[in-house]
Image (cartoon, rainbow, N blue to C red):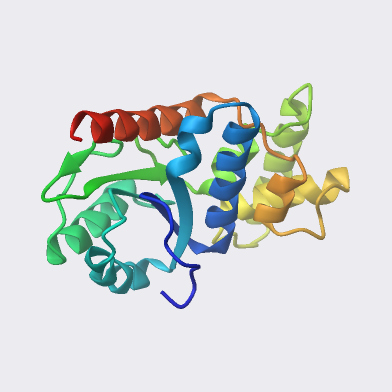
Length: 221
């Protein structure tokens, strides 16, 4: 738990990396600021890289305060492999294993769910937080033509032999550079600065999942 602050809330959202963690922290702050105080019981924590999740889960059962865990990570280039990776680790450490993303299961006292960027819904697809981000920029009107121009530019560079192993990051940070906004900020910091529109379909899917966790927790009391 060295990367994380003390556990002091019953509903944990375990995030892959610092950017995703800050993104979820600011989302929870957004909900609370808008008067949705029922989400006050959630706490976002960074479990590190995907290979570090097992070490984090190994320690969780000793914390009596924990009532639920929701794991959030990138689907990356193979959303089915991402799901299998999460399920394998959960099974290895004795947790209930959801059959699908955004499904809540329980074995013992802790409810378990997981969700994948970019869709944050049961309908998973390949991609990352950056893909979700680019689809829901706060700039109004949404800069569709500029994004299309960026994609044309990237394709032209590919045709010249340039490789983009992290294509979603390349697209998003090219947008930041062209607009001269948030270029000095990490993704979590740009979220705090207002670059992302939280009132979108993907975030509403996550919100429903969190609400369902709260509802089931009340019903089991």
